[in-house]
Length: 438
Image: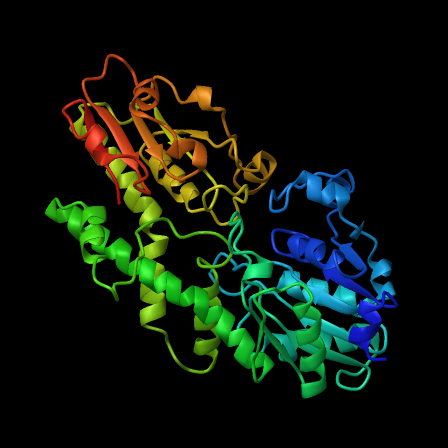
């Protein structure tokens, strides 16, 4: 009986190392089929899971209450499993070089508790070579075991889209890879237990690593083009969304839109690819150009808030500005690498300390990462300018009366900045409002 059959029969367990927005849904999905140990070093997070609370809101409290995942912060429990999936974040440092400390740390933890006959699959987004050249030596050093002899290695890049209830683990084709044919077969069969859309067997681990990192780089470049168009069309006095709607009537026009590009995927992964390219002696031109544009959009939005306050004859330093939304994307509590903070920082440079409203966001995380105190919706009152920065569902439901109620009654002009263009522009296209969007 091979490892896959033993897992299926309940004789062996599967472990998840890292229980965030990616790891936890994977653990829950596998727990419907096999025995699962869910490990995270964050004891507070483990406590919430054990209490039936889903802080990520990816699967919901009811699912967490009923799952059979054995949640633990005790790394020695990993010794009970022989198929391990590592799903930890891979951020960038302040100088935009890869920060591999989370994946290196996870490799050390797993290495200390690795047993013979195990298969280790990494899901973290990395540049080609990290799994075999960085993670494997750590696993070997910590365990005293030899890769290819005592344990096998694989890579299957995560494709979960946080906050998206349609594109989930089960419904997205899963890329899988292994160090040899036997490992690939085991990895593929294990993932096929939960991925209804099926798996794609990549020819090597490096190919799978590269496929993941270019997925987000491609999207980043396309959004950068939209952002550059937005800058150009704003100078021409043309509404960008209207242009894109017209162009979108052609069958092969790619329907991307301008916006803030943050988070721990699209805003990060291109730097992993360009870092590796630099090591190989090639300086990226297209990818880094896109990154520069997207990284600058928060400042660009803030500048237009200030310009429109001046147009409205509102003294900038004494202006009250409210920002609706702080997460990196809509309908998701995750604030990591949010580009809304760039709007906040730039407004502060002009002497404006904006009120930030986001009842979806993780307040503790926002406080810890950025020193930002998030306010309730009631705080968005008597403002001179309102910035809708994130397209949360509750903001999409705002009608003109609700928007009107946020502003000072004494102002002749109301400055409304609709970053994602979620409102009906025609409803605010009168002398009462100065409406601006990307």
